Length: 164
Image (cartoon, rainbow, N blue to C red; front, side, top):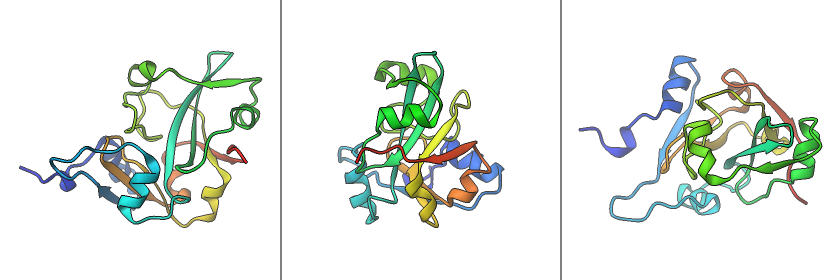
């Protein structure tokens, strides 16, 4: 039987298939509660919170869904996010809609491998890093990928989308 840290998630399989170099992290300690708090995850990994990103799924008044990635210690500015995608307004989707829409649960949502490809906007701060860390599509797992390589897997754009 494979050890937890040796398990591959669908995100890792997609990265392997596209021949994208990545590092993966498993922060599951058997018998302990697994956190989905991004700041706590960054601390567990010994990483700078500005380099660890959370994936947020939104819906516009038009019904179009959008994915946003922001540093775990920051918040998505819904007005800036709407402007970045050319919508009048957007809001976070209800948590109960996340799994049926994306195939992911809260705390394990990744921009890679969703049921459907949605337009994805990443905080412009990501472009200043050689590598960023985000969910590997399962609670307890993270991947570290170069932003330039992430662009080879999903369509992304950078914008100022965080609150001040």
